[in-house]
Structure formats: C-alpha cells, structure tokens
Amino acid sequence: MKDKDLRKLIGSRARERRMELNLNQQYIAEKLDVNKSTIQRYESGTIDNTKKLVLEGLAEVLHVSVEWLKGETDEYETKITDKRDLQIRDLMSQILEVKTDGLDKSQAAFLKDILILIMGEYTLFADSFVRGCTGFRIGQDNQKVAKAMGFETVEEYDEIMFLREITRSINAYNDISEVLRLYTKDAKKASNRLRALLADFRDEE
Image 1 (cartoon, helix red, strand yellow):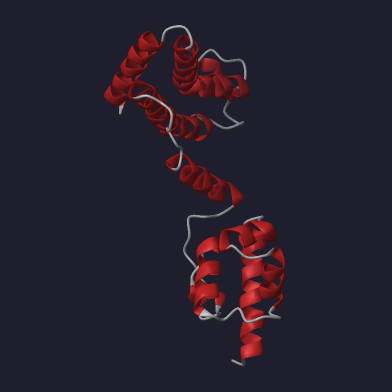
Image 2: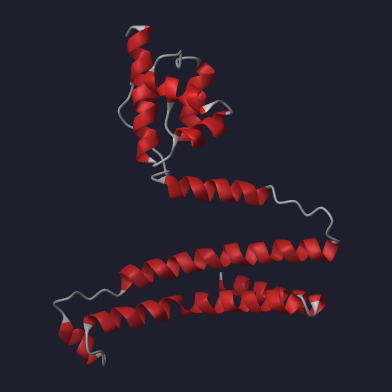
C-alpha cells in the first residue's frame, strides 16, 4: 500500500472510531497533547500519521489496535463502546489524583473512607439496577401472574419489583448524606458512623 493510501486509511479509521465513540477532535487533541488542527490533518491524511508514536497514541486514545488503524485487521476487541466508558475512565483517573494536602490524618482518612463506601455501594447498586430492569419482567401477555401476586397491572409489578431491588442503595446513599451532614457538627461521631457503615458494607460483600 502506498504511503498516501495508508495515511488516508489510518485517518479514515481514526475518524470512524472517534465518531463511533461520539468524541470531538478537541478531546483527542488534548489526550495526544497536540492542536485540534493536527487531529484534523491526521484524519484527512494530509500529514504523516504513520509514525509509530502517532499510531500508538491514536490507538491508545481510541482503544483500538495499531493493526486495525492500518487496515491489517477488520476486528478489534475493546470494552470501550461509547463516550460514557471513556468519561468513567477519565473520572477514575482524576479520583486517583485527588490531593489531600492540607488535611490532617483523620480528615484524609474520612475522605478516603467516603470514596471507598461510595464506590463500593455503586457496585451493589449496579447489580440491583440490572436485576430491577431485567430480572422480574413477566411480559405484557402475562397479566394473570401479576394479578395472582396482587398487582393490577404488569407495569405496577415491574415498578414495585424495581423499587424493591434498589431500595437498599437508596437507603445506603441516604446514610452517606447523613454522615456528611453530621461531619459539620461532630467530625468524630461522623467518622465513627462512617466506619460502622463500612463494616456493614464489607459484611454484605
């Protein structure tokens, strides 16, 4: 393949994947530490995008392989399916970079414990949400089952079962809110309450 054709192919595939992820060129530019115009030129194939560093950078940001960008394969395996996946990864990176400078030992511990509890509760919530959305559907044509369980409609059954699934998470996040409000009045008591919530959470894992 001629260099010009390869540049065009790489640019076309990079743009295709960027659009698939609903990302703008500025996002890619910031990740690669280049100007937006450089990304535009990479995608159009008007400048050399075949260099190893460029290819590896594009592949990493777009979560594809260099081989796919070069057209050597038509398949790529990735867990990144949309922009939300990237936003989650970016936020996780930001969490890891949170500074605790200026906080004393107990304040820093409280901050970290809150993070552990929030993230841990999210994993439980995700499981509950999936079950609530998919685990109890009985179908629009099965009104008799809903009525046998005391529900007037399938929709009412779905709503109640969904709420039953996520009630634990609602209560858990209410508990976290109460701990944060308590912290302004009594930091020690709030820290003790937080440790108790963490202990309960670990018992449920």
